[in-house]
Image (cartoon, rainbow, N blue to C red):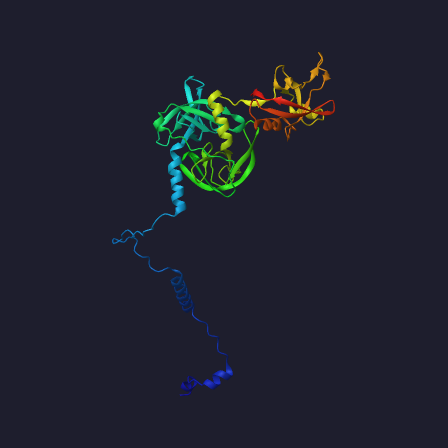
Length: 391
């Protein structure tokens, strides 16, 4: 019986004689808790069940009536419809021979745009569009293709004329406007073939007037039109139109580091085009008004410490010779004997170099008289010179 008494539990005695061990949660219990938390978090992140991918009852949406086009939209559409038949696509190629077989190979050199100048088949474009080729194909708006012949070019103005032998009923000449009364802010339209995409219309405004760009020859083209109408490679040679659909310029260059339109395009004014193109059709070249002189290169004049256009020769019978101008005289051993006259101005336009002299003369016609201011023996003198045909 004494043994049995020792087995009885005495809570007070246990607390006073020994410390109970701390209770630790079971690892299974902790795993279960984390599983519940993870499941709840995953359920919160996971989207709901996706909707069915296909709907057998799907129908086209009803069409909403739009009403009439706005007046400016109709005007733009009318401009494109009227002018686009006059715009053409030009491909330029060259013919070479295979190195081994000597067979002729045609290589495309470029493409661009142009427009029909008259119903005789004359096509106007940029000189740089046709410069690298010996074969040209013109595609009309009706998609017919015509072999073209080279009529002539004015490299200094980046203009060229081709001719196709299409029947007159397929040729719709573009309407000609003027560039003298253009205003910054007025709406303009460009039609062309950017990146080979035919009959593309872009719109914009005249951004600035009187700009200056340079042709392939290095000569400055002045009074150029700047526009923000998108002009990209392939637009070159295409028309720039006013809101009446009249030609006001020929798209020629863009200002862009990437080569794509950056909102700065340039067009040669139509007044220059309408003066140059008839000469190219008549003569195949531009006949410039000239003084009838041969001049020294600009660097020679600068080496002498002079600013102006120094005369090298004054051929007999020319306008300058009749007016009494004189050229440079050298001895037999090429030493300077007499310095030629130094042209300072033509009318009121200063002529510090040859380009300035050519620009001053271009505003006149062959047969007109100009007042020439020149320096001779350190004295300023004047002469009236009748302009003659030059190149």
